Length: 231
Image (cartoon, rainbow, N blue to C red; front, side, top):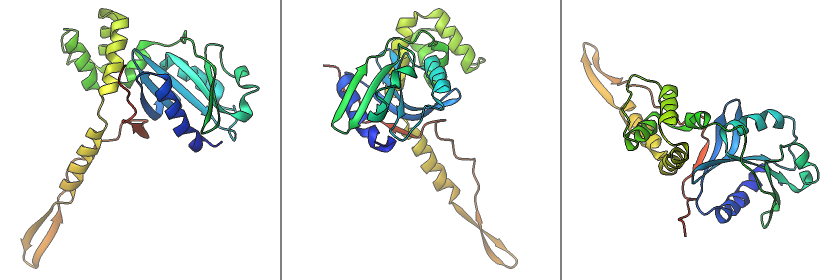
């Protein structure tokens, strides 16, 4: 199976496996691009896809980056990799094999990554989300501090288990459409035309405004509908 054919079956499987999950595709984590990040209650789960046409050439460096950002990591493989997949990832990595869209097997469950750091995970948060965490934990706004400094203060002052719950809830509630709305509004402004009367006639002048805000760094596609309520 090819990568593009493995994703939808994987997402359907994850919906059933986890009681609540939000899926983010193609997110930059350090020097790698994570194929899939899953946000679950209190944890981040990473999924690196190796289709039948892929090799393990970059996997060593990818494993190091996933380990820094994800509480749990999975190697998602095509059937051709099943025999040797476990030789290429640490024993605490899980393995999911997808033979076809209806044949998905959890070959090995993931254990907690010993290298994950909350300070790395907090790099996934927006400034507004950090401000929200400060507020709900009754801490000052720290408007004179940068994101890294605020993250450090939160980790020092708030119980880390509670903070993980709050952190993942922020990612559950994040609304990526705000970028689309801002882009649409600015596009409308950029197409506004003004007319100026001159000696040679009336000239149309396009009004320039500030640049469009960027898309969230490293985010190619966010699946917002895949969120299941707890039973």
